[in-house]
Length: 292
Image (tube, rainbow, N blue to C red):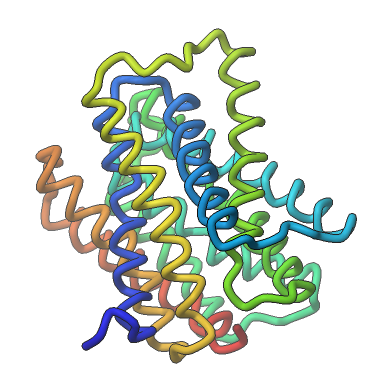
């Protein structure tokens, strides 16, 4: 299968993005700082690509406004998600972030008057049961930090849904199929937002070691730039089923990396809960993927 095959690009992109929480866990910088370098390195790399290809960034004022709104949502996404990763681990934090499927479903109902299908309604309680099997049914019995990590993960899903809705509207108005210009400019905006946030929080943007620099470069170049472009370039050419599988590949692999690289203990109940939550995410995403 050629790498130019859309399906292979889709799965390769999802696999690269699944490594995102691994880079965050490996580096010894703050959550805001790691988010800053993800989008800073990624945005600069994509901008250099545009300069080499002599591609002009001549957006209308309306496109710039939508890009800024998308950047705010994506900055919030990274701010919440990186904190969730550091508290509850790469696997659970990524699973929680993918609950954006259900917030997208709610947005479809409220904003577009799109009633969910019966299967999607069933998916919501299934996802909650799966989550409860992973973290335990006694919410008050969880450590305060762990509860905060779960809340941050769910806020990540809200912010990510806002980003996806904005990018969907932006892509409807775009004149190119591959959104390199949009992702490049949005990434630089997010870097400016997170850089300002780090300074306000009193967090240093210094990279302490060459090892940290290597992990952050991998995060920005591989997971952010290459991963996002591979997925974006393949979506118009793959089936809804393939898109749904790719949607599940990211949290599934992130759970796998968490177990392999960070020795996360997983009981049979937790594994069953993760499988149930992933199935619910797939069930909830089916309608949206068919409409995409």
